[in-house]
Length: 221
Ligand code: DX5
Ligand code: ZN
Image (cartoon, rainbow, N blue to C red):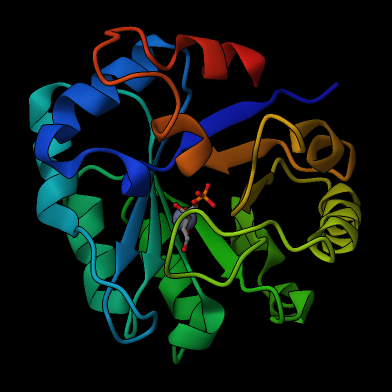
């Protein structure tokens, strides 16, 4: 009996009203704030960095913040996100020269560490670092943009990741990111995910004028 967490991706929120958007989605039942960091180098888009994470903490956000680093190199930003109040810090192993060291940096900073796997990245990156991983994040789209379609091959990969987690005996969260919708979340959960990122499905829901616009989609999840 797994506990399921919903992590709205603020990539699809209204950046001009970010604090309010995060407050609203948490009030509607979100568990975690998924924070997408893109550098126009590792991925072809440019978003937000540690200053915005810190601003959300100063604004009063106490929920866990899940910083998904789509950046290369990663280590310097790890320190910045530790200082900025991130809870989880995840990075793509291909973007780090020294994966074990990057994981250790995150844990030494008191944050929870995770590896992110692109659709074509093998899970074998986990082989020698399973004891330093608190979260495994499987991308079900190619990273860089919200609003893309879920890649079905990720379901088998989720089952394989779940087997590895169960075999480890450790409490490692299994997160899925990309194309998660009300219509496919049950199937994704059956494949083994316990933490669900949803960007466009959440932030494009409801109407701008409704102060409780995210209530119904969050309830549907
Ligand atoms: C994509 C990001 C995702 C994105 C998901 O690179 O990592 O977190 O916001 O957006 P949706 O849920 O719209 O696919
Ligand atoms: Zn993400």
